[in-house]
Length: 334
Image (cartoon, rainbow, N blue to C red; front, side, top):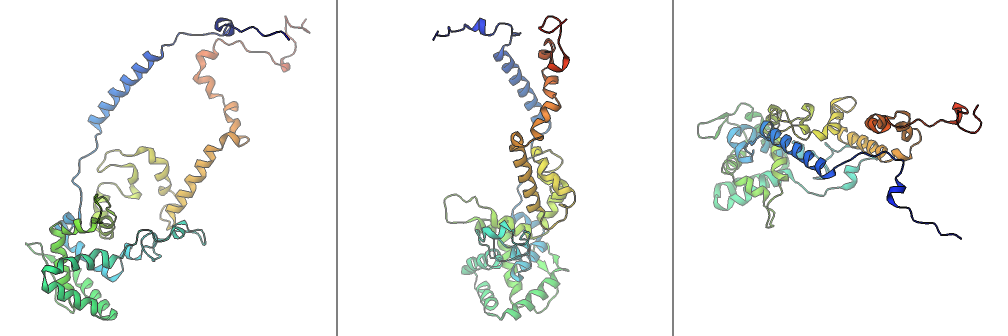
């Protein structure tokens, strides 16, 4: 058998039209343009440097909302107290369709007891240096649940007309509140001093970076959501795509946040799960494009690639096909 002779590069590429191309030059120009654009965008659309909101700023700026939220945590009426997985055994925020509820399948992975974690435990830690607070906590925890409920309902009702004194304390009408005034006054002092921020992130580890509890506590009130609305950060305001104020943020999330703005997603109790399912299906469809008949043929039916590479195809001589019939210069031609 005769061995095939190797073909040199010039022979191999003979007949193929080529153009000079300097990859390094193109890369340098592209990087230079990108650098100019980045610097210009940084100057015009830089991320705003907003002061972080904390429990301390919350309790100082809106003490009525702070105490009202803490009372709701004790009463078990807040979002976190009734949330469900992954925080507790509630069901108010659990999403699913019948048996299909991945949130429930995962179970309680980060246990949160709203009354204990946000109110009773911090007050117990502070009670060591405050005999009056220690007595108030003892009176509350030893009281009958029905008595606790009566105190909480009466106190929550009176808070609706509470006023903020010049020293930051609350003044409100008297009533049958039991030990709650002493407890909430101490919690407000703890919050205004910044002690509650430190207590809620303390986890016994070297790095204190878990802000789950402070965020849940603040999210149960009206102060943080109100700030979010003012800064255009709510879900109904395309919040995931925004920085604070009018600054653009994570614009690549538009496809995800888009669904929350249209029916049947908008206002639906299962919106998060529905969006996740929708995006999963769309992502799988994108991955499987090469295997889906019809869909994979669209590039051949709509040859956009020829428009992109039009300079290349401009010099190409169309090849005759069998449907064109015999042509001059070929076997079978006239």
